[in-house]
Image (tube, rainbow, N blue to C red; front, side):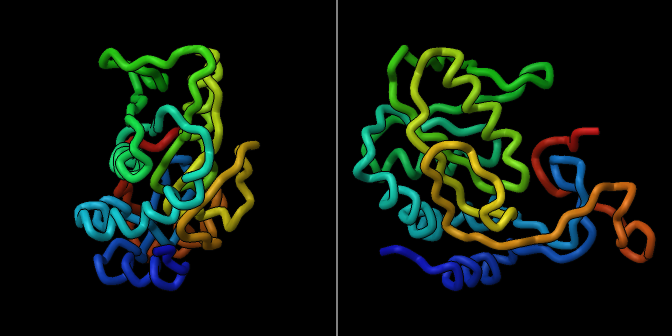
Length: 195
């Protein structure tokens, strides 16, 4: 039941999860578009449909565990794991450092699929990949809902997004929206932006 980019975008529109304005992204960059995946993921039927694209892509891969960064990736990772019949764990920040907590662990050689909600620069995913590698587990792929980079971010493993779009973002000191000063800057995500 693979969804097209158009069908996924339609779900974002229906749930009012594609926002327009002036946004501060987690990476510190600015953009006039923001994908608020939480507004889509609040509906289990949409979550199941959208995550099926990721699960179908990785179905024939050897996977033991699905791991995701908190907050945005948790629901995605859990749903992909459910569809694949695997278990799901997540990383989170402690003193600004991505880490495994809550008794979660990975064994050497364990085959791991990394999941995320939105990728702009891929920072959180790269951090999770480093955690997996540091524990001598094996990354088999990366799945995510929205690829804001239009395929420019490459994690070095098989990767699958359910929606690939190019959404322009700007360094804060070169943001035309700031220069126009007509729309207030908003940070709608779950994590404070990096300075």
